[in-house]
Length: 95
Image (tube, rainbow, N blue to C red):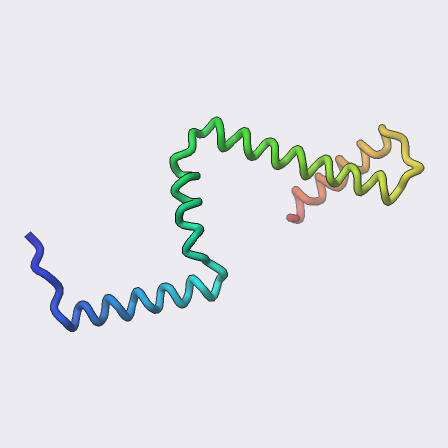
């Protein structure tokens, strides 16, 4: 059985907790994200994958529309080729 913390241990623990909270706020962490993390952690893998694929598809569709807007004279095949090239560049060099 563990004994209760001494006042010194409580003070040190409190100081560490306060420092951790300060660092988390500095990187943009918000306490409300904890609930979202719990929800995501309990989500079945197939739901996570479905969400990921929907997000990916929406991003590819947005990129396709942007290419079409920037270069309206391209055929659908040319848009597809340019889309593929841009996706390859994103894959190679990051987003």
